[in-house]
Amino acid sequence: MPPSNVVRALFVHGIRSRILPQPHKPHADNREHREAARLTPLTLRRAKTPPQPPKNTDMSRPSAGGTFQPLRHRSGTLRDRLHGYTKQTLGAGGSLNDAVALPPGESCAGWVAVHAIDFYNDVSTIWAVMAEDPYLDSFRPGEGFPSGVEYRWSEGSGKDATTVSVSAPVYIEKVLQWIQDQINDETKFPDDDDEAEALRVFQTPAFAALCGQIFRRLFRVYGIIYSSFFGTLEALQMAPHLNTCFKHFMFFCTEFGLLPEREMEPLEVLVKPIRKQYHLAKGK
Image (tube, rainbow, N blue to C red; front, top):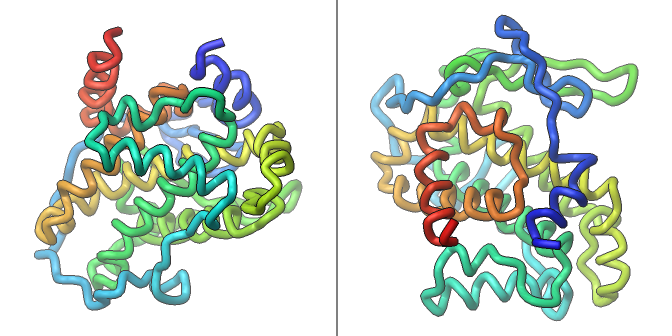
């Protein structure tokens, strides 16, 4: 079975969203209430005020409680070994298509798990550059999202779950903190010497659902950054790095079918040419 079909089967519990056509309502960001807003193509917007250099040069995120440190893969573990494939491919001048392809003989679930961590590090590094910019405080709840959509945050679980309207910067902070908490939980993202145990966890339906949510939320963070903060990052000469990280992310998601079509509509103007490049390079 091709890798893309393997992942689609693996992630059937977590990747496919049910999108309800309710154009006038913001949607909640949890498993029970997804994408109830009408999604429209992205319009890149400049900052409301002239961008200011970040106060913090050590890449801190204020509400995350300190200096950002990339999440590491412990040396000698399954995660570290899989992470090494990508470093070696890109370091040797290989193509993005080669970098995202599943290495022969490796676990597809483990490959997706490692990339969830690596893509989290990419997004966190980009966001940390401007995390203390006073401009972020100018957004009110419901503001700063891609045109036609508002991502709401879920608090609690089960019958006690509620959704709250937050600003785009607060949404990003909550997403990054939530992903960090999941990855730091060894029961969810094992990083020990026992490869068999790590693979057992990675191949469960619960992990599939978790990774599905992680990739959707990372995509939404990119959507917010492009729609409301691109001008600021461009002024900080961070736009090329942002574009490179997003292209890598999209090549991987396209390779394994990790994002529903409807989810990608707010960034269609950016996603469409990237996916075209991916398919041309694959000869499709």
